[in-house]
Each structure stands twice: as structure tokens, then as C-alpha cells.
Length: 362
Image (cartoon, rainbow, N blue to C red; front, side):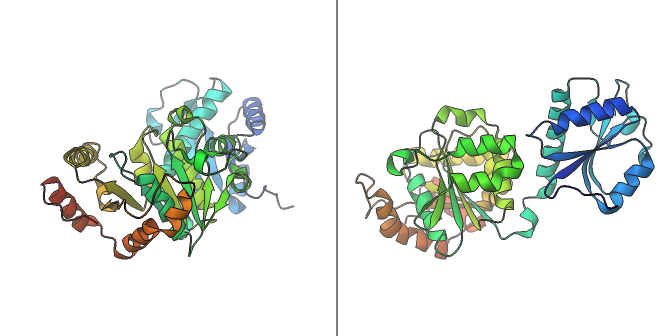
């Protein structure tokens, strides 16, 4: 009889001769709703080989006594060794976890190893989906970043499904957009961490449609933003992209995120609003130097520098979004998308600005 594996669930295998240990650990994992894996226990090589003929194992926990040469040829993404405390110098190629610590600690180490591997190897291609992740960020304050990001999402949404996410501690958007009765970005992160498989349902419950785009309310208590590790935001954004529901995800990035470079590195493109005063130029120069020191130079090639116009729209009246989406800002964004510049040309423009020869005033 063909063995049935639950659709959508990844497989975590435990291969250990200690049947009681393997069964108890498997039962504990199965009871944790926050772990999106179906657990399978194997006590001999033949059973493992037969299972791998028709099924893929994402993570396999191996007893340190296993003969590894027989394992490498099977369909297994990640191998983690369960050590009984001995020094396993012959197995340095695999992550090693001490098997007799608490189950929670073991699970934590397993997920850290698995997620780190995912981030390094996925290269954010999202299984070939046509996904455009756009970051809007600037080290300069009061430069029109959020107005630009909102309008950009709305313009992109004319022709393709677009989601706008705001990562500011104090965005002010709740006063402009009535979203108090809806789940916010913090709620979405919480439910995703509890049960990743329910992301699509929770996303649909949180998303509001505003003009041409979908919008999820920012975290209502801005201090919570700093409590979330940047890698968790990368995972959530990547998971949303992987659903295939959106062609564009616009990230409005403030200073509340712990490691902004993790998020910028995820983006296909980054718009960076600037101002022409000397302090703003110095801030841009320091940010550029920071990228070099942090060895994230590749981010520079994704950046489109722009000075945002301020004439023709007002943020003071009750028609804030209407002014953005139908006024001068919308026309400005249209022009940016059609005639955008990047790479060396953009860097040349920045250098001209920094040297006092502003060749990029819009």
C-alpha cells in the first residue's frame, strides 16, 4: 500500500537505533503546531531507503553511529547529527546537536541550521516566480520616503498585483487609513511563526485593498518592531513572495528594523530619496561607506537615487492618499519608473552631488 504524506508538509526524519528516544522526540515535535514538519522515524537503513524512493526529506536527524556514506546518495536536503557528547571530528561537514538537552533547545538549533541554509541557498529566486521586491529607504529623514513608497505601490498596482508593507516605528498611517479593526504586520508575523502553513489565510485576513494596491497595517506598537530579528522579516517577506499572490512587494523601510542591510539585500531594487543640503549629502556618503565596511557593496548597484518633488500635493488635508495617487506625486513616480537610472550612472550622480555639483535635481 502506498504511504500517504500530508500535502504541503515538509518531512523531518529521525534515524536512530534508540527507538524509545526517537519515538518520544518525534511525538514531542508532532505536538508543536509552530513546526511545519511531518515527522518520520527510521530505525534501519532499508526503511529509510524505501521511503526516499518516493518522498523527499527536508531534514534528517542522524545518530552519530550511522554510516554516512550510505546517506549522502538519498534525497535529503539537510543532515544534522545527534551527538551523545563525543567529539565527532570525522563529521565536521554536518551541523552537530547534542541529543540529550531539552527538546525545545534541540528544535531551536535544528531550525536555526535549517533556516540559515535556506537563506544562503535560495538566492531569493522564489521558485522562478515573477516577483519584484522593491525597497524604499533613505538615511535622510523628512525626504518624502513614505509618500513616494505609497504612490509607487499604487502605480505598480495598476498593471500587477502589488503589496505595500511599512516598517516604521511611527508611520502615522493609522490616522490616514482606517485599519484599526484589521490585523497588522505584527499579527501576521506572530501567526506565521506559530503556523507557517496558514500564511495565505492569515495574509488574506490582514490585507486591505486601497486603490490599486493591497496594504497591511504597520505594527501598532512601534517598539515591537525592534524585537523582531531581521532574518525573521526576511523569512516572512520571502514566504509571502513564495505564495505567488503578488508580482510586486513594496517595502517602506524605516529605522526600526535591527539590521536594515538584511532587508535591503533581499530587494531587487532600492529607491533612495535624497535632499540637496550638505548634511543630507554627508549622510549619504556615510551610508555608502557603511556598505563598504559591512561588505554589502552589491547593494549599491540596486540603488536608484532621486530627489522627490514637493510641489503640487499636500499632506495636510484629509485627501492625503487621493492627492498622492492622482496628483503630481503620481506623475513624478510615473516618470521615475519610465526613466529610472541605476548602477554606475546613479553612483556618478551621487558623487556629483557629494562634490557639490548637483546633476540630479528633479
